[in-house]
Length: 281
Length: 359
Image (cartoon, rainbow over all chains, first blue to last red; front, side, top):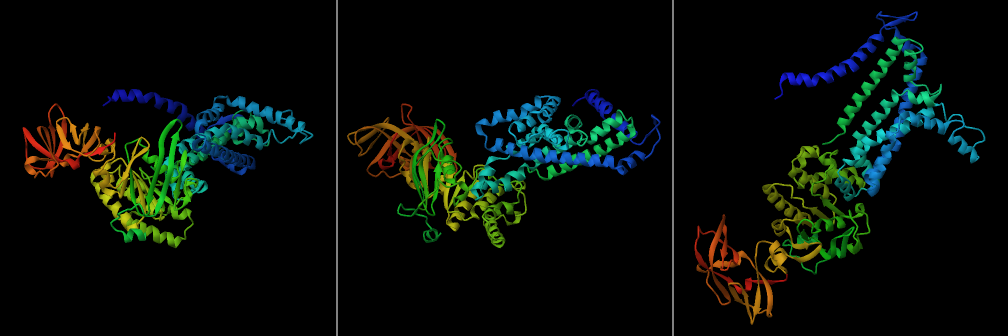
């Protein structure tokens, strides 16, 4: 057995780390959300005013709803891209499997910011896409909605988070014993039935994990709306950022952050429960 | 099914209708030739066992018939119809997998109902047939359980039930008993045989266990390195092995490599009359064909030899002796249990029991 001193010694650094850089900031944020700002000065006066503002002003609620809508769209799009890709790789790619897997992973090594600017270059009025469409005479003037819109945000976030959705789904599919697929064919089920009755149900934990990744990461994203979102593509993290910065309304920013935190934790909890419900070992 | 009822002894004759025909079937994986020119007929209602060591290609034959692999050459026919061109899900063949392959997300009942559901059978019929099928393998009380909650033997029964509920023309069993412990295995062997009689379904059974093959089969097809070594009934293949390999693989034997000269076979210290042509020859002499001279009356055509006892292994009803007939030539002899022996003894065997085999 390990001595008491040894146990204390090894558990202290992580405890300190978590306490100092996680629990303390969260506690401060939580406290701030019940404080107020008067004439540019933070006053430690406990009240619920920030939460009332948050839920009564349509601006904040509107952005929060839009953020959730964008996150949901990103989740859906990355699932629609990531699942078929994972399915193809796991069941049909054969010799090309390793190569394709690496090709899916490679974008993860490229800086998030670089990929953001790449989309700006592609989608802008002077961008690659508009230039190409005019060259083909599909359009005569640049199409404006491509950049600085919720569409652009969804596009960019889908591009960034599809590998995150792909990975857990691919892992889940790889874990399905192949004799189960053969057993299904053996019992008279064709490819579609086998997919719906065996492969899909057994891949649900991976699907849930992927969907949770995409939704939670999109929910808190502020770079994509900043780079390609424009005014109509603003998300809740941008609001928090401006409240903490230019607007200097720390308490309201903290209240919004607490709300996002609660949504995120509830989602993670729910997803964990569902994943357990759908895992069979 | 009527053939099984009319013929409870399951004496299979070549005249019976062939259910499945393999015609010159070969299978290559890349450069590796796993099966070479296999031609084999399986009669309706027959229990045929594919026996062989691991790597002999027996499971590959099963996978070709099931439709999980495509033959590289040759054809497979079932009841006058080409089978190998059909996808697996269109074949009236069901498989009991080696590790059962039960669907972990479905209950026992849903597992058994799977085949009927995908065939769009009516709900009432599914209910009746699933109950009946679970009853046959004595698993009704576990209908609501998940496979993970069952023991290996129980999972085995569910796998069997899931296959037979579809009333296949042919049931493929891939070493279904290999994961069970010895006692359960014996019990399942007997239940499997009873079930086959009751259902009259043709069984194509794969095993590496020659005892299991002997106990269950109407005929055994012995595979060696992807080729058929011999196809015959268990008694036939035991009594008249065609090759030295078969003789050694099925049961125990003494392989005698010797010479025939002027109607006498000679192998070391042993000599006996034979009618084969002169030249080098190999004989298989089963341990139980050799007796202690004191126990046997010696009719004409009996060979005698003296040998020194080396080892004696007691196994209940019988014992196995290892004897040295001189010059280090060892023979195995199985005699009825009779207590400890030592020293030199005289042994006899009938010349007709020394079966000439090919290399």
